[in-house]
Image (cartoon, rainbow, N blue to C red; front, side, top):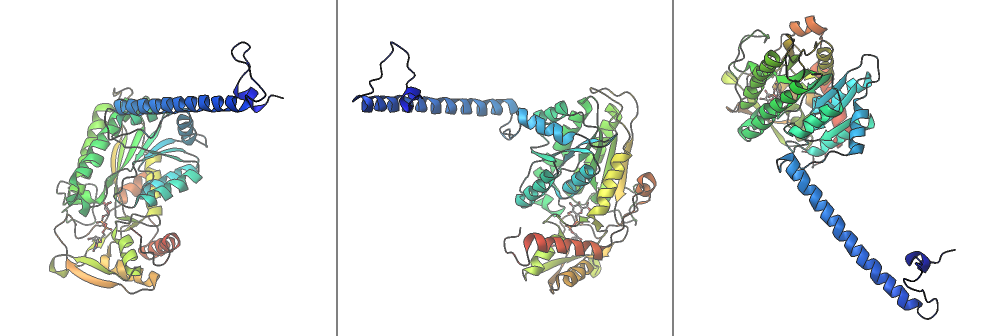
Length: 430
Ligand SMILES: O=C(O)[C@H]1O[C@H](OP(=O)(O)OP(=O)(O)OC[C@H]2O[C@@H](n3ccc(=O)[nH]c3=O)[C@H](O)[C@@H]2O)[C@H](O)[C@@H](O)[C@H]1O
């Protein structure tokens, strides 16, 4: 049996002779000295390789902003597995914003019915990224991979389409929030305009081209005062930069449909709420503040009129998203060339029952069994509109969209989730 020394000093005859007697200590020290030298060299080589690789990724990305957290054989395998369909005629869908509120729900619903899903999300810190990570874990438990990356990363986008022939893209990644646009306008341009164009450029060049369904917004109706809002109403009077970028998105997608034959559907979502929702939205922040005993600020419109929203429950929205994907039609182009006309559609996805904001607070008080401390203030001129109200007859006709959850029921589900996720009175909720 070889001794430790034999193993450390392979016996190459003539090179050196192991003295097994009193020289053993000296040999051992030599051995130690030589291993530590090897160890230092190994460290040096590892450091050299690491710096080379990070320099390569810096050069490759062409932009310091996108340090690659993706790539490799294992990663490619995971992407392919995640995209695999599990039903005859199933779709392979790239869901952008998959760790977001609507994105996570839609991803789970697609997977559940046997479609393949690959998620993409940049996990930005507009609101607490730990909530996004929790959604990602949920998706992961259902074998859905969510890639951490930015829409504007051209190489990543191309790589994803290289690996998978996506049949559909559900584009939900965006800088959301109406009022935040005054604080951080460039984020809206970066995500909702530049990111959208990068995605469309990738899709137009893909072969086969996917059909695209994407998140527009009820906010495109802006100052429109004809109710309920119909897809035929004017959308050229946005009241916020957020709305303007969504409206621009509708025009941009039209161009790509027209020039490249991409099948495109825009969904005008009406104030979507529910479990796993967005902490920046009123129903969510009101809940947190009511539980923490803090005052909530309720905006009021001109002549002391209450503001109202056509709050729409997440499960209804998910059905609308799946219905849109199922009826999207096909893109006609390939490799950047149009071969014929492709469908271009826009739909309202609302609830058709606007509710006043103070009524929303009443419902929350009831479910939380806590009285809110209310402060009523005049609506600041920050992009808000006084009310929204969807006419959904077009979506009903095209794919049977029919919302079934009223605000009472939806908020009850939300409060149940909130309490199970955060507990009754956690101080560190975003
Ligand atoms: O349908 C959309 O396209 C948009 O819906 C959502 O916007 P909004 O309808 O503005 O929802 P949200 O912020 O929950 O405010 C709700 C109400 O509470 C009022 N509000 C708000 C905050 C506050 O402190 N006080 C208050 O009264 C406020 O004045 C408003 O009347 C999404 O955030 C947006 O990303 C986009 O998807």
